[in-house]
Length: 438
Image 1: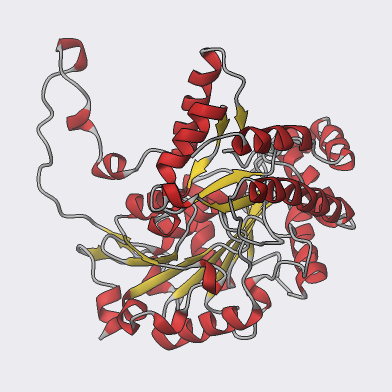
Image 2: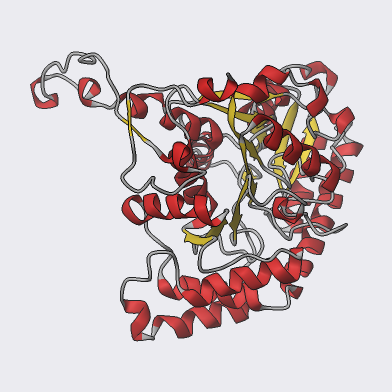
């Protein structure tokens, strides 16, 4: 049976905390049986290396493509070139003043000089629950269904470690945020991707997926609004996902990193869909909504029974945002969200500037009202080789962009350009690209 396949792994021992029913089978600890591993060799001081001492999971982690691009940009700048860096999702605008002031005031309070509660400060969790209720019409119990995390990535990492054993299958639509591959690799899981295309708005055609994929799946990892495309999930899409999850007995996690960032309808939470609550996890970041990337704040939402296991792992292996950061985040979540709406309009204006300029250069962009990027198709002369086009742009114009292949095979004909630079820099970058000959 499909369920039997899902839960096969190396020899397993029951989690002492797994008396809880329902999700308990998915919260087991695996005891790995392995061979001796690679020979250790000699110590580095004796001319050897550390390779024989590294865990296999560390060797399996791919290089972070954004860190690699940072190195490339630094090298170009060190060589004296004026590089405009459109490769990053690093906000260029300051955190709203009322949030900064709340954080500044919070640093002086004695409670924030001490360890925070393991699950997060009550005020922060209540603010997150209030945000869900006001913005998405979703009622979440802050005492049992929420967890404060240091940004979205720690929430994603915690959940995947709790759910995935070696050999399990995680399904991810392309294009995808590159660290998802690392999450699967560290867990020893098999990552199966679903291709998407512009014709379908970069939303996967779930009817075209082999049912065996769903039978094998333990987790479907989504990211809407999507990085890199800006595609936004519809209610109908989420409803179909939820039906599949119930039918094939897998869980769904939405990386809601770009919550609030859009100029049409408000980006929809997965939890707002009927039937989603018992099969869904959502991870929310404050980095983009409030320009708080450097503050490292976010939260995860999950059914209480599953969240108990997520919290158990997080208590041991992770830490919470600093108390003052949680207080600043609570100020943002409790606010009227006008700063988020203004930010969305600002990004939409920038998207228009960049897309129109690229269009004049013969480069067509995917039309999106969400997220922080322009997803642009490479010229015909570079068809199938977005990497070469990205390299040519950097070499000839000193504008750094991400090649679409970083986000999976579906991105090979695209490049991703960030909107997180000033309008003047975007205009200059587009002018430089327009001046290229290809």
